[in-house]
Length: 330
Image (cartoon, rainbow, N blue to C red):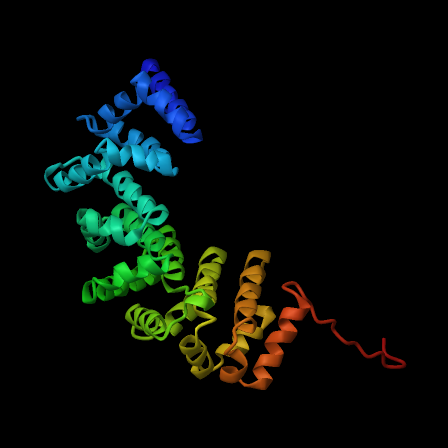
Protein backbone atom coordinates (compact mmCIF):
# COMPACT_ATOMS: atom_id res chain seq x y z
CA UNK A 1 0.00 0.00 0.00
CA UNK A 2 1.43 3.38 -1.00
CA UNK A 3 2.03 6.06 1.62
CA UNK A 4 -0.72 8.18 0.08
CA UNK A 5 -3.14 5.25 0.57
CA UNK A 6 -2.20 4.94 4.23
CA UNK A 7 -2.71 8.66 4.78
CA UNK A 8 -6.02 8.56 2.93
CA UNK A 9 -7.36 5.74 5.10
CA UNK A 10 -6.19 7.49 8.27
CA UNK A 11 -8.16 10.55 7.14
CA UNK A 12 -11.22 8.37 6.52
CA UNK A 13 -10.88 6.83 9.98
CA UNK A 14 -10.64 10.29 11.54
CA UNK A 15 -13.69 11.49 9.57
CA UNK A 16 -15.72 8.48 10.78
CA UNK A 17 -14.63 9.12 14.38
CA UNK A 18 -15.65 12.79 14.17
CA UNK A 19 -18.92 11.90 12.40
CA UNK A 20 -19.82 9.48 15.18
CA UNK A 21 -19.77 12.23 17.82
CA UNK A 22 -23.05 13.91 16.79
CA UNK A 23 -25.40 14.55 13.88
CA UNK A 24 -23.94 18.04 13.56
CA UNK A 25 -20.40 16.66 13.27
CA UNK A 26 -21.63 14.22 10.63
CA UNK A 27 -23.13 17.08 8.61
CA UNK A 28 -19.80 18.97 8.65
CA UNK A 29 -17.94 15.87 7.47
CA UNK A 30 -20.56 15.13 4.80
CA UNK A 31 -20.31 18.71 3.50
CA UNK A 32 -16.53 18.32 3.20
CA UNK A 33 -17.10 15.62 0.58
CA UNK A 34 -14.83 13.13 2.35
CA UNK A 35 -17.64 10.75 3.34
CA UNK A 36 -18.76 10.66 -0.30
CA UNK A 37 -15.19 9.75 -1.27
CA UNK A 38 -15.17 6.95 1.32
CA UNK A 39 -18.48 5.61 -0.04
CA UNK A 40 -17.13 5.89 -3.58
CA UNK A 41 -14.23 3.62 -2.65
CA UNK A 42 -16.60 1.24 -0.88
CA UNK A 43 -18.56 0.75 -4.08
CA UNK A 44 -15.52 0.91 -6.39
CA UNK A 45 -13.78 -1.94 -8.21
CA UNK A 46 -10.78 -2.49 -5.91
CA UNK A 47 -11.76 -5.46 -3.70
CA UNK A 48 -9.05 -4.84 -1.10
CA UNK A 49 -10.09 -1.21 -0.73
CA UNK A 50 -13.69 -2.36 -0.32
CA UNK A 51 -12.67 -4.67 2.51
CA UNK A 52 -10.93 -1.78 4.31
CA UNK A 53 -13.70 0.76 3.75
CA UNK A 54 -16.57 -1.46 4.91
CA UNK A 55 -15.01 -1.61 8.40
CA UNK A 56 -15.13 2.18 8.61
CA UNK A 57 -18.71 2.33 7.33
CA UNK A 58 -19.66 -0.32 9.91
CA UNK A 59 -18.23 1.95 12.63
CA UNK A 60 -20.34 4.82 11.29
CA UNK A 61 -23.44 2.61 11.54
CA UNK A 62 -22.93 2.17 15.29
CA UNK A 63 -24.65 5.53 15.94
CA UNK A 64 -28.34 6.27 15.20
CA UNK A 65 -27.50 9.40 13.19
CA UNK A 66 -24.87 7.43 11.27
CA UNK A 67 -27.40 4.73 10.36
CA UNK A 68 -29.93 7.38 9.35
CA UNK A 69 -27.37 9.03 7.05
CA UNK A 70 -26.40 5.71 5.43
CA UNK A 71 -30.06 4.85 4.83
CA UNK A 72 -30.98 8.30 3.45
CA UNK A 73 -28.02 8.27 1.06
CA UNK A 74 -28.99 4.82 -0.23
CA UNK A 75 -25.68 3.36 0.95
CA UNK A 76 -27.25 0.39 2.76
CA UNK A 77 -29.10 -0.49 -0.47
CA UNK A 78 -25.80 -0.26 -2.38
CA UNK A 79 -24.11 -2.63 0.08
CA UNK A 80 -27.04 -5.03 -0.30
CA UNK A 81 -26.70 -4.91 -4.10
CA UNK A 82 -22.96 -5.61 -3.89
CA UNK A 83 -23.70 -8.74 -1.81
CA UNK A 84 -26.26 -9.70 -4.46
CA UNK A 85 -23.67 -9.31 -7.21
CA UNK A 86 -20.95 -11.13 -5.27
CA UNK A 87 -22.18 -14.43 -6.72
CA UNK A 88 -20.51 -13.66 -10.04
CA UNK A 89 -17.38 -12.05 -8.57
CA UNK A 90 -14.47 -14.51 -8.16
CA UNK A 91 -12.78 -12.07 -5.74
CA UNK A 92 -15.81 -11.57 -3.47
CA UNK A 93 -14.10 -13.59 -0.73
CA UNK A 94 -11.96 -10.54 0.02
CA UNK A 95 -14.82 -8.21 0.93
CA UNK A 96 -17.90 -10.39 1.47
CA UNK A 97 -17.14 -11.20 5.15
CA UNK A 98 -16.98 -7.48 5.98
CA UNK A 99 -20.21 -6.74 4.11
CA UNK A 100 -22.05 -9.54 5.92
CA UNK A 101 -20.68 -8.34 9.27
CA UNK A 102 -22.01 -4.87 8.43
CA UNK A 103 -25.56 -6.21 8.17
CA UNK A 104 -25.10 -8.39 11.24
CA UNK A 105 -24.15 -5.34 13.31
CA UNK A 106 -26.93 -3.31 11.73
CA UNK A 107 -29.52 -5.96 12.63
CA UNK A 108 -28.49 -6.00 16.28
CA UNK A 109 -28.40 -2.23 16.86
CA UNK A 110 -31.51 -1.67 14.76
CA UNK A 111 -34.21 -4.34 14.37
CA UNK A 112 -33.28 -7.88 13.26
CA UNK A 113 -36.72 -8.44 11.77
CA UNK A 114 -36.81 -5.18 9.80
CA UNK A 115 -33.25 -5.55 8.48
CA UNK A 116 -33.73 -9.19 7.47
CA UNK A 117 -37.08 -8.48 5.79
CA UNK A 118 -35.84 -5.40 3.94
CA UNK A 119 -32.54 -6.99 2.88
CA UNK A 120 -33.31 -10.71 2.37
CA UNK A 121 -30.01 -11.14 0.51
CA UNK A 122 -28.24 -10.72 3.87
CA UNK A 123 -29.82 -13.79 5.50
CA UNK A 124 -29.55 -15.81 2.31
CA UNK A 125 -25.82 -15.05 2.10
CA UNK A 126 -25.26 -15.91 5.78
CA UNK A 127 -26.90 -19.30 5.23
CA UNK A 128 -24.92 -19.90 2.03
CA UNK A 129 -21.66 -19.08 3.80
CA UNK A 130 -22.51 -21.33 6.76
CA UNK A 131 -23.38 -24.18 4.37
CA UNK A 132 -20.13 -23.78 2.40
CA UNK A 133 -16.86 -25.67 2.89
CA UNK A 134 -14.70 -22.56 3.28
CA UNK A 135 -13.61 -22.27 6.95
CA UNK A 136 -13.24 -18.47 6.66
CA UNK A 137 -16.78 -18.05 5.35
CA UNK A 138 -18.19 -20.54 7.86
CA UNK A 139 -16.52 -18.63 10.71
CA UNK A 140 -17.99 -15.28 9.65
CA UNK A 141 -21.44 -16.83 9.15
CA UNK A 142 -21.35 -18.54 12.54
CA UNK A 143 -20.28 -15.29 14.24
CA UNK A 144 -23.11 -13.44 12.48
CA UNK A 145 -25.71 -16.05 13.47
CA UNK A 146 -24.51 -15.77 17.07
CA UNK A 147 -24.81 -11.98 17.02
CA UNK A 148 -28.22 -12.12 15.33
CA UNK A 149 -29.51 -14.84 17.64
CA UNK A 150 -28.39 -13.08 20.81
CA UNK A 151 -31.73 -11.22 20.91
CA UNK A 152 -35.18 -12.78 21.11
CA UNK A 153 -36.27 -10.90 17.98
CA UNK A 154 -33.24 -12.26 16.14
CA UNK A 155 -34.02 -15.79 17.34
CA UNK A 156 -37.55 -15.47 15.97
CA UNK A 157 -36.18 -14.34 12.60
CA UNK A 158 -33.94 -17.43 12.45
CA UNK A 159 -36.81 -19.68 13.51
CA UNK A 160 -38.72 -18.62 10.39
CA UNK A 161 -36.14 -20.50 8.30
CA UNK A 162 -37.49 -23.71 9.89
CA UNK A 163 -35.83 -26.88 8.56
CA UNK A 164 -33.01 -25.00 6.83
CA UNK A 165 -31.92 -23.48 10.12
CA UNK A 166 -32.36 -26.80 11.97
CA UNK A 167 -30.05 -28.44 9.39
CA UNK A 168 -27.61 -25.58 9.79
CA UNK A 169 -27.56 -26.12 13.57
CA UNK A 170 -26.61 -29.74 12.94
CA UNK A 171 -23.69 -28.55 10.80
CA UNK A 172 -22.62 -26.11 13.51
CA UNK A 173 -22.77 -28.91 16.09
CA UNK A 174 -20.59 -31.04 13.81
CA UNK A 175 -18.10 -28.17 13.39
CA UNK A 176 -18.00 -27.63 17.17
CA UNK A 177 -16.76 -31.20 17.49
CA UNK A 178 -14.57 -31.68 14.41
CA UNK A 179 -13.35 -28.34 12.99
CA UNK A 180 -9.96 -26.69 13.70
CA UNK A 181 -9.81 -25.25 17.23
CA UNK A 182 -10.45 -21.61 16.30
CA UNK A 183 -13.64 -22.45 14.39
CA UNK A 184 -14.76 -24.83 17.15
CA UNK A 185 -14.52 -21.96 19.65
CA UNK A 186 -16.53 -19.65 17.41
CA UNK A 187 -19.20 -22.34 17.03
CA UNK A 188 -19.39 -22.84 20.81
CA UNK A 189 -19.76 -19.09 21.40
CA UNK A 190 -22.47 -18.84 18.72
CA UNK A 191 -24.35 -21.82 20.19
CA UNK A 192 -24.27 -20.16 23.63
CA UNK A 193 -25.69 -16.92 22.21
CA UNK A 194 -28.39 -18.72 20.23
CA UNK A 195 -29.59 -20.84 23.15
CA UNK A 196 -29.55 -18.28 25.97
CA UNK A 197 -32.93 -16.96 27.11
CA UNK A 198 -33.23 -14.36 29.90
CA UNK A 199 -35.63 -15.56 32.64
CA UNK A 200 -38.14 -12.77 31.93
CA UNK A 201 -38.42 -13.88 28.28
CA UNK A 202 -38.90 -17.60 28.87
CA UNK A 203 -42.31 -18.13 27.32
CA UNK A 204 -43.48 -21.68 26.56
CA UNK A 205 -43.01 -21.08 22.81
CA UNK A 206 -39.45 -19.77 23.17
CA UNK A 207 -38.49 -22.59 25.55
CA UNK A 208 -39.81 -25.14 23.05
CA UNK A 209 -37.80 -23.38 20.35
CA UNK A 210 -34.47 -23.43 22.24
CA UNK A 211 -35.09 -27.06 23.23
CA UNK A 212 -35.64 -28.02 19.58
CA UNK A 213 -32.53 -26.05 18.53
CA UNK A 214 -30.44 -27.84 21.14
CA UNK A 215 -31.76 -31.20 19.92
CA UNK A 216 -30.83 -30.25 16.33
CA UNK A 217 -27.14 -29.78 17.18
CA UNK A 218 -26.44 -33.51 17.53
CA UNK A 219 -28.04 -36.88 18.23
CA UNK A 220 -26.84 -36.52 21.82
CA UNK A 221 -26.08 -32.82 22.27
CA UNK A 222 -25.52 -32.90 26.04
CA UNK A 223 -22.94 -35.67 25.64
CA UNK A 224 -21.35 -33.78 22.73
CA UNK A 225 -20.63 -30.72 24.88
CA UNK A 226 -19.73 -32.86 27.86
CA UNK A 227 -17.06 -34.62 25.79
CA UNK A 228 -15.71 -31.23 24.63
CA UNK A 229 -15.66 -30.02 28.25
CA UNK A 230 -13.44 -32.95 29.30
CA UNK A 231 -10.74 -32.22 26.70
CA UNK A 232 -7.39 -30.88 27.95
CA UNK A 233 -7.70 -27.57 26.09
CA UNK A 234 -8.80 -24.73 28.41
CA UNK A 235 -10.43 -22.65 25.64
CA UNK A 236 -12.59 -25.53 24.42
CA UNK A 237 -13.31 -26.66 27.98
CA UNK A 238 -14.56 -23.17 28.92
CA UNK A 239 -16.47 -22.84 25.64
CA UNK A 240 -18.43 -26.01 26.41
CA UNK A 241 -19.09 -24.83 29.98
CA UNK A 242 -20.49 -21.58 28.56
CA UNK A 243 -22.96 -23.60 26.48
CA UNK A 244 -24.14 -25.37 29.65
CA UNK A 245 -24.37 -21.99 31.40
CA UNK A 246 -26.48 -20.56 28.55
CA UNK A 247 -29.14 -23.25 28.99
CA UNK A 248 -28.78 -23.71 32.77
CA UNK A 249 -31.82 -21.59 33.65
CA UNK A 250 -34.18 -23.44 31.28
CA UNK A 251 -36.22 -26.29 32.84
CA UNK A 252 -35.87 -28.66 29.86
CA UNK A 253 -32.07 -28.37 30.08
CA UNK A 254 -32.08 -28.94 33.84
CA UNK A 255 -34.03 -32.18 33.31
CA UNK A 256 -31.53 -33.29 30.66
CA UNK A 257 -28.64 -32.59 33.04
CA UNK A 258 -30.31 -34.51 35.85
CA UNK A 259 -31.07 -37.49 33.59
CA UNK A 260 -27.51 -37.67 32.22
CA UNK A 261 -25.59 -40.18 34.41
CA UNK A 262 -22.92 -38.48 36.50
CA UNK A 263 -23.54 -35.01 35.08
CA UNK A 264 -24.56 -33.29 38.30
CA UNK A 265 -21.59 -34.92 40.08
CA UNK A 266 -19.37 -33.51 37.32
CA UNK A 267 -20.76 -30.01 37.94
CA UNK A 268 -19.92 -30.06 41.66
CA UNK A 269 -16.55 -31.81 41.18
CA UNK A 270 -13.87 -29.15 41.64
CA UNK A 271 -10.98 -31.49 40.79
CA UNK A 272 -11.75 -31.40 37.05
CA UNK A 273 -11.03 -27.66 36.72
CA UNK A 274 -7.24 -27.27 36.32
CA UNK A 275 -6.89 -23.49 35.85
CA UNK A 276 -8.43 -20.17 36.87
CA UNK A 277 -10.43 -19.67 33.63
CA UNK A 278 -11.99 -23.12 34.00
CA UNK A 279 -12.81 -22.56 37.67
CA UNK A 280 -14.45 -19.23 36.79
CA UNK A 281 -16.46 -20.82 33.95
CA UNK A 282 -17.65 -23.67 36.19
CA UNK A 283 -18.61 -21.16 38.89
CA UNK A 284 -20.74 -19.21 36.38
CA UNK A 285 -22.52 -22.46 35.50
CA UNK A 286 -23.23 -23.22 39.16
CA UNK A 287 -24.42 -19.64 39.71
CA UNK A 288 -26.80 -19.84 36.73
CA UNK A 289 -28.26 -23.08 38.08
CA UNK A 290 -28.66 -21.87 41.67
CA UNK A 291 -30.29 -18.60 40.55
CA UNK A 292 -32.92 -20.44 38.51
CA UNK A 293 -36.41 -20.55 40.02
CA UNK A 294 -36.99 -24.13 38.87
CA UNK A 295 -33.70 -25.74 39.96
CA UNK A 296 -34.76 -26.93 43.45
CA UNK A 297 -37.87 -28.58 42.02
CA UNK A 298 -36.05 -30.25 39.10
CA UNK A 299 -32.77 -31.27 40.79
CA UNK A 300 -34.22 -32.11 44.20
CA UNK A 301 -33.12 -30.82 47.59
CA UNK A 302 -29.89 -32.83 47.94
CA UNK A 303 -28.31 -31.63 44.68
CA UNK A 304 -29.67 -28.12 45.13
CA UNK A 305 -27.99 -27.79 48.54
CA UNK A 306 -24.69 -29.08 47.12
CA UNK A 307 -24.84 -26.46 44.38
CA UNK A 308 -25.63 -23.72 46.90
CA UNK A 309 -22.68 -24.82 49.04
CA UNK A 310 -20.42 -24.68 45.94
CA UNK A 311 -21.67 -21.16 45.19
CA UNK A 312 -21.15 -20.04 48.80
CA UNK A 313 -17.58 -21.43 48.89
CA UNK A 314 -16.60 -19.50 45.76
CA UNK A 315 -14.78 -20.56 42.58
CA UNK A 316 -11.37 -21.34 44.13
CA UNK A 317 -12.34 -23.23 47.28
CA UNK A 318 -9.97 -26.05 48.23
CA UNK A 319 -11.05 -28.57 50.83
CA UNK A 320 -8.43 -28.91 53.55
CA UNK A 321 -6.89 -32.37 53.66
CA UNK A 322 -7.29 -33.93 57.10
CA UNK A 323 -4.23 -35.66 58.57
CA UNK A 324 -4.08 -37.84 61.66
CA UNK A 325 -0.92 -38.00 63.74
CA UNK A 326 -0.12 -41.50 64.99
CA UNK A 327 2.03 -41.78 68.09
CA UNK A 328 5.35 -43.44 67.37
CA UNK A 329 5.00 -43.03 63.60
CA UNK A 330 8.21 -42.12 61.77
